[in-house]
Length: 428
Image (cartoon, rainbow, N blue to C red; front, side, top):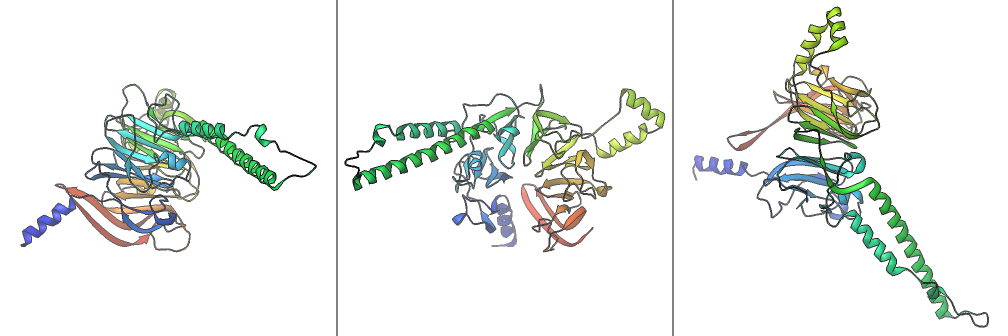
């Protein structure tokens, strides 16, 4: 085999996309133990390749196949809401049923809710009802027999196991009770305990229905507005529109919805003011009088004209503008907003340490944030309790500003995927 043939084989292999998993996926790992090294994920029979990886929620994983199907796996049947949120998919990756035949282009998962968007600009979300905007829920599309059906089954079981008063009676003769009667009485007591436990479980399930739905709900931002991307935080959700605007809903107690206040719950999508292009009315007159209008417009121009990427951490959020500016907002206790402090940010604020640096991509975890610049440099900031910043330190640390720790470039050139990794020393 000559050199050209060898190169041809390598190029062909690069076209195959593989997905690996590691960490805690109880339904996909032996004895529910964490996977300490990458394990290849089995491709569903309905797909010929993978398209994208979406991460996952608490105890399950998500990815998108080449045919645009949302694939979930990794949960276990004793994981409660997590199991239902994932579509009851355990060891074997399977398509998640959605009320649309359109291809999924993006998806995300929070602690107990999921969100996805189609190539037609439609968004769907399910899970914790506080994370699902108020509106019509598509009850016709229920995963694996719905939460409600499971409860009906419990009720049927309860009805068939009810013990009649007559069956609980005992025959007493001469003040003595036979061993047979004692055994029957014990069996009846055990049965009543089982029924009591089943009733408690039923009540728990009924309560769960009030706060949880497995039926995907269509998300509407406004007339004619299409969704291009979505991101899920712990208890909040962001959506990016085709106009480059960011919308949010869910829990906002730490400012992760960027609305300028610690609003506890937003039940419908609200527009997040990430970029203020101009002032108006009284503010404009005052700005002109103070001679600050031009500087404000220059600042807006530096931020950009629209948002092109969004991400959510556990309780904080981050967006990237078309100019490559990184804006963060929300919980800042561990410095995950990159502003040089541990204060919460109630509205989108530009990360000043990235002045002169164009940010290309961003991802957020529970206590930290990682982003990559156009030159391939990767930056991280926030908590480092578990080494999530990759600085090599063993002890818990908090980096309030960006820390450069390695360079990772993955790109596509004529259909071939290439990867280059460079290591560099951390620096603040």
